[in-house]
Image (cartoon, rainbow, N blue to C red; front, side, top):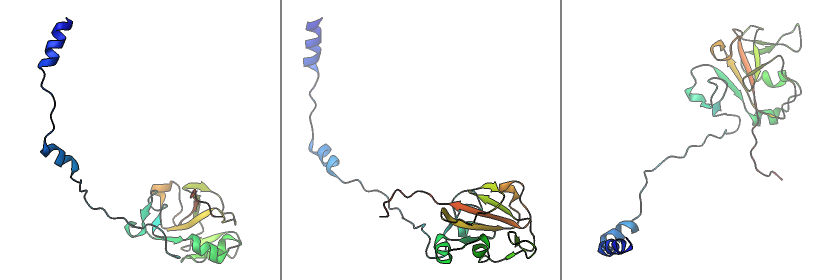
Length: 165
C-alpha cells in the first residue's frame, strides 16, 4: 500500500510558475469611484429629519412641512421654557388662557413626542436634545392618534465617543 502511494506521488507533475501568472498578481486592482457626502448640519440649517418619515431622511426628500430647530439655535437662545424655543417655528403661538400650552396652526390639539414616543409635556431642560422637529399637519399615519395641528418631536442627543476635554 505504501509502495502504491509513493508511485502515485512520484507520477504527479510538479507545480510550476510562469511569468504571466506572476504579472497578473502584481497588477493593481482598480475600484469604481464613489462619492462622499456631508450630512452634518450647517449653522441653524439642519440637513436631515427623523420625525417626518421615522428614518433619517434628507429634508429635501420629505413631502410634508417640517421645521427643524437645530442644536446651534438651542445653544444660542438658551431657552428657559419650551415656548422660548418653539415660538421660533412658524405657526406656533402661546395660548393666552394657559401659559404652558401652545397653539399650532390655530389648534391646541398638537402632540408631543420624544424620539417618536408620546409624552404629555415638554420639560424646559434642553441639555440632552439634539434638535426639535415641528411637523405640521396630520401625521396620524406614522404616530397613531395625533391631532390635526401636528406634532413636536424632541430628538435626543446620541453619544459621539469623543473626548471633548
